[in-house]
Length: 152
Image (tube, rainbow, N blue to C red; front, side):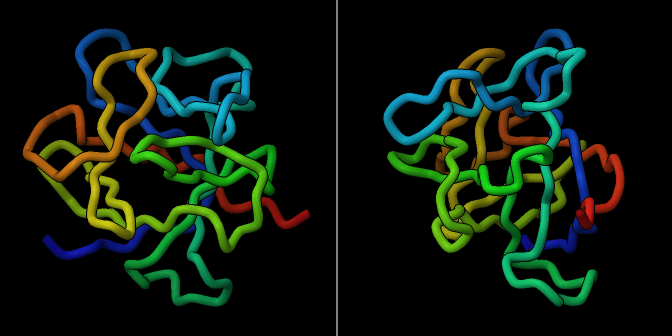
């Protein structure tokens, strides 16, 4: 598949798993490589459930398809990292953040790492794993655009 462009901005990232709506969520407690990233139900406090998707390098054309980095919307230094093929959020330099591309699939998008691995939500509450891409709904996501990147 061909990578697609994503409008840089603030998002909720919805997982396509069976059960109530789930979104990508940073857990509260850091262990090992940072805070594990899971899927969880909507939380009334969006602090750990809203993400910024941005081009790796500033100044990229909005239509550019890759690569992107993702960080917590309210903690701009806390980006996604991928040690041991699992998704974590950690306050490390932007150069250490994982790089992602997006591909259109039936029902949403597939989020792929720079190693070509797909984000997979096994079930609500499980840490997001990166696996070889398969045509499975656990690897399908919906990006809900919430607005532009804050310029504070």
